Image (spheres, one colour):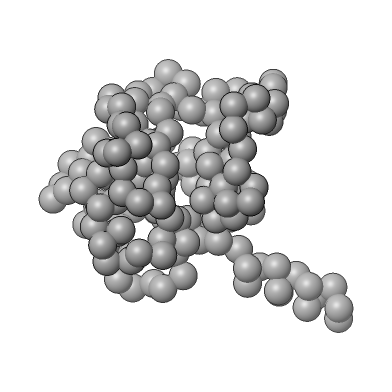
Length: 156
């Protein structure tokens, strides 16, 4: 009984990550990485789908979005919209085509350049959710020295 209570409590504390990526393969890979790290993954193919999910759910902790997407807004505009409408949500922005400076980012957000390793995504998500766990430089490199590159040959 105690074990089931502990399992319920830990699953109730799982952070929900909304992944917004128009490329179905990249989205599927991101969902897999996020779920294997113990987070709950939601997915959207564009910003409009993402906004609909954000309006319907109050448990989303992190927005993980690509920048270049079709539709009414790109990922950076989506990130700014999320910052304005849902201030507590942390934001992870990724792109292989656009490089952003810190000053280009909404508050409480970070940029991750593609291609990236799955463990780098996980480290960034954990640092956004729990800033006390922030990893930098050599800590990121030591996180899985033999892991394959996540999206290594795909940029976008």
